[in-house]
Length: 288
Ligand code: GLU
Image 1 (cartoon, helix red, strand yellow):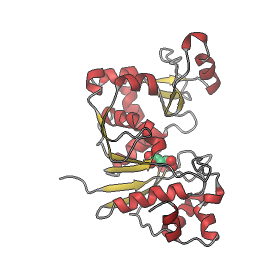
Image 2 (cartoon, protein in one colour):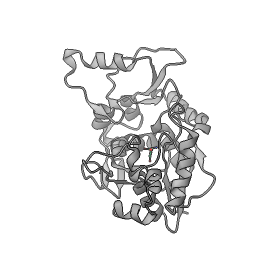
Image 3 (tube, helix red, strand yellow):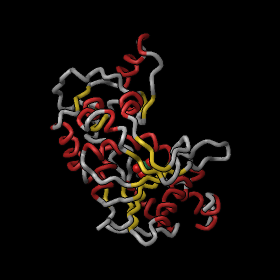
Image 4 (tube, protein in one colour):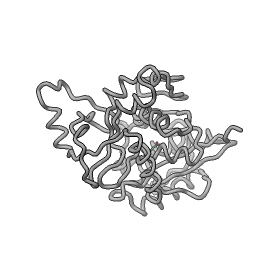
């Protein structure tokens, strides 16, 4: 039996929701009609996440007319599940410990022979400094050994057959069935951090583990996360997780064309509410 259509909105409670979040949440909520709509608190960043922002998310979404299934899961309460997923990859020999700081990575990449540093979904693509270092420091970060991961799935030709089904558009307009590229995974994404030193996990691991655990069939989110999607697809293959379809949408921009950020309080739903906006006015401001 196929699972019921399940959409989710997965905000990080690190600021007030703005018009861009309203767009994402309303799009996913409407797409979920006839199925399930989940709200998930992505609060693994315990330094920046705050209960006041979480409360505001509940209030603002309810004000927009959105209803979600309960219970709402919080990622901060599920760290052991994420750790278990990383442990499985480690048991397959696909990870290594890394003690590099950001400054170490920048310094390694500024060496003349390296050429222009590439940016992946998490910033600079890691140059592999610790790949063969065999650190045993328990507080080190844990990275995916991307080349080993690709080999474990059968090599480039097999990985190139894996696909992402995109119902929306990627940041370069990509849509439909999009094949992964082992070469891009190695060179353009690289050995990403799976478990950060400070929180013991990463967004990428938490999101694939939770989407699978919650039976999410459709992932609606902003195009800024499209570049991370091949990595998510690869992690699903490595961890034998079910594969959802994705719908990436354009980002809401301010009048100057700049993408909205959590610090743009002027576009915060809460501020617009205080200024007398109605949910209908929010919808029309974002063309919904
Ligand atoms: N927590 C992420 C954010 O607030 C969204 C993650 C996702 O939808 O996959 O940007």
